[in-house]
Length: 206
Image (tube, rainbow, N blue to C red; front, side, top):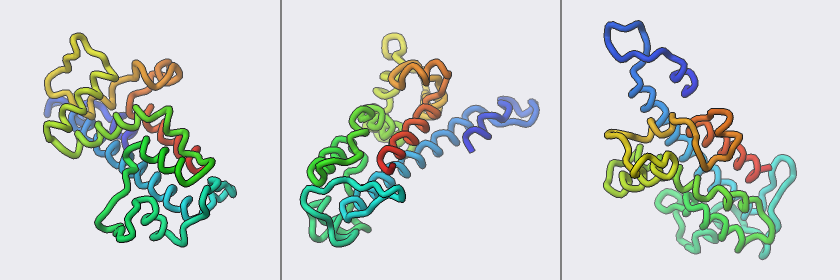
C-alpha cells in the first residue's frame, strides 16, 4: 500500500491532474508504520510465549531452556508476567521494551534468538516513539517524537520545521544509524525500518 501511494503523482491544488496530496501520503505511511510496529510487538510476544511452552519453529529450532518448559500458553503468560492471575484480555507483557525481552529470555533460556534485539534496541525504542506519536498527541509523545526526529536528522540547532510529524520523518532518506548500505541505497526511514523488522523476525524465528 505504501509503495503504491508513494508512486501516485502529488496533487497540491484542485486544478492539478489527478493525484494525492503529500499530507495524505504521510498519513498513510504513519498508519502503516503504526500497524507494523504493533504487529512486531505481537510477533515478539507470541514467539516468546510459545518458546517458553516448548514450541519449535518449522525448521526445528527451539531455544535451550534452563528450567524446563511451561505446561501450556496460559502457563507461559503466568511465568513471564510472574502473575498466576494473568489475564490476556486485561494484562500485557512488556514486549515493547527490547531490554525486558532480552533479559527475560536470558532468565528462561541458556541460549535463545532474542540477543539480536540488543544491537537494534535504540532503533526499536525510536520506532515505538514514532508509533506513539501517530496514536497520541500528549506532551510526552510529542517530546519523545521530537527527540527521535532530532536523533535521526540532526537539524541545525535541533530545530524541526513547524508541523513536522511522523509521516514526514518516515519518508525522509536515511542519513545515519541504519548503516551504510541503507544510506547508499537511498532508503527512507520507513523502508529501512521494514528491512530491519524483516531481518529481526527471521532471526527470532529462524
